[in-house]
Image (cartoon, rainbow, N blue to C red; front, top):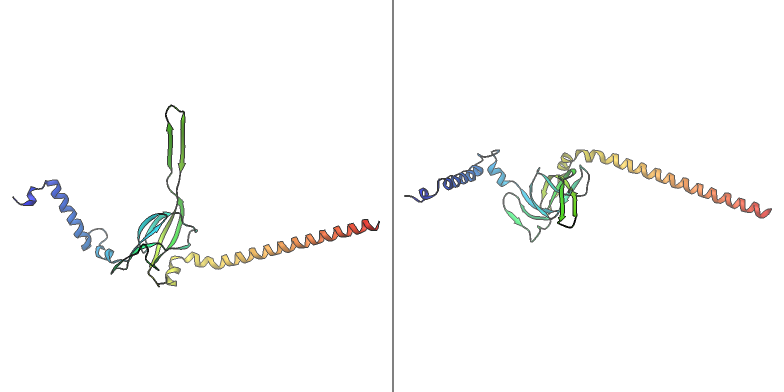
Length: 207
């Protein structure tokens, strides 16, 4: 009897199935047919919100809340490891100069978690709910030390932000002008009041 025939049929089937999945993934026969390409793609391991994420370009990831409205580009600087498709660089603990550029897609809350506390024979019952604030981001680019994101990529990934930038500048200028006008009006009114008070005092003194 061979060593393979001594195994239980279910165990032998499971081992053969795992071997098939391994070689099928490498040869590209499984999933989307990009087994070897997926291994060669550039990826990074970043840390944000106390958690670690393995990300690649164009991945959509839900992380702990990050500051910024939808369409804003943020950079994740805590890069623990980076793979450019040829070699893996592991940081100590961070990879110096590496960062990951991402676009904020939306701000949302997670599903509600109910916390119930009870102490028997004490008439103590407390129910609380919590919804964690999350941010959905899309990875734009993975940048090693000295690399800069190309303006074409930033425009392609953030067309709305670039288009809205001039309008935002105009709106801020208009707000500044209105505030300045309001301040000047308030100053003129205050001066007029002080002058009227001074005139009233003089008239009373003359009498």
